[in-house]
Length: 515
Image (tube, one colour):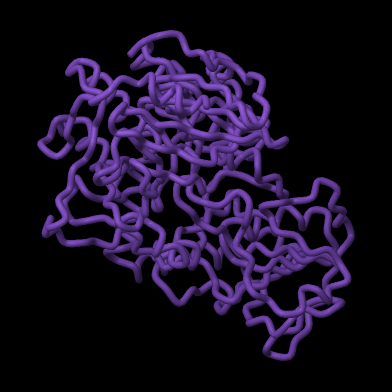
């Protein structure tokens, strides 16, 4: 399986109608956290295997390159959002978008990953041919040129939301607004809000980030929420991490801090599920202390338990500082309609606005909207089960990253990459071309709702998402500590994953793709 990749670097696209054809061992979709992580793991663990990264954007970063709204930052600490193999060296543990991009770009450059990335390639289709045991991927550039890439294994690091279409809540009167209406997913670089009245619709992580950032320049920012969100205050700088970095080698300090933070996240989540009233009281007391006489119970007491939706992080309490300073406020109400000068609420109140930010959420999808087919039949993800959190029942040679809902995305990306590399090595050792998690139609398993979160973006997409069962092999588990130990110890050849050989040579598929 090992040879030099013929698709290193960006490469020139071919003209429409005569796609270029190349072949690699692994095709990685996306050059964000998941894709860069998989590329790095392959170079460390499978250096004799070739790979190519197909990235639709002109730069590395994925989500962190797309989102450019004010204050964009991580919603978890960088000692767990960072990779297991690369220490986070910045002083701030809760990092801004540009710092995260610097981190990813440094990894890509220092490890020679960039030359394997083909930028400006939007993957349209991925077709598996069982006879030749190959995926054929067709991608397109902005000018309509097509490329064909053939791969033995497909790794989807394209995230879980639609890059082209955000979720837009149906709010009447948008067309009547005389000011500027923007969605954070597509932030205009030239938006001027200095000295203006801003309304941010929403109460999730994006809104809680945007409000204090915009409040620094705006006349006033109102966060308009239908339902409050549970917020947790923590320092932007991890004092223990920075102390350890002064007295220990970088990698040792990072490993200890990562271990600490993983376990703290795990404990907090489980405590929230087991003793929600205790956690509610703790979070409320912290917010009361941050707001003083500006505390409004209606604005900061959600009608659900902590971690029924993702807990929103407020580093250094910046949102509450803006409220205490009179630069921001929170209104809890329902929208009647948008008019020319602002928003009229169902209570009869009117909020004047020059700028309205619709931080109403993301639109989820599976496989980055790529049409995935196995022997001509399109894959309906909702009819397949997760296998070990990254592969799928009866879908050969394919893995995808869906990060943790209750912890950092990269924790899952790391263990998925490690697993796939072990699988590739096992396939090579066994002389196998195909790895398929086989599940019979009459499996008799009990389904389990691992998406047990009331967040709107998850509930809106439930019909699209793969299934999970109570059996650990067939689920997207939400416990990193358990997952890491289990994935490391459970054998690749577990009686479920079938390793087989191709029944034909690959050349015919390559020739057909080139025609």
